[in-house]
Image (tube, rainbow, N blue to C red):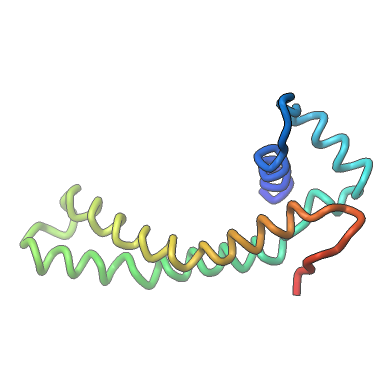
Length: 119
């Protein structure tokens, strides 16, 4: 969910010798940004999920057809499923990467300066 994505992104972006705790990061986020801070970037997260699922639905079955036609394997064979998933995963990554960049920037912006908005 988005609150844990925000915490994870904050923890990954932290710099310094001390590793911050998740509880400390959550307390700091709550104190500085309130409950809304845990939902920063939710709009881009929803758009990301829609793009991800749409790409998965659009690519997996056609990829499976290509694999079956190229190899002669059965549609339900494990290797067909594997290579179809790899192909669909490639296209999903290409589709979702821009949303991930926007989401990360929204989640990491300082509380006192709104550099990016959800528009």
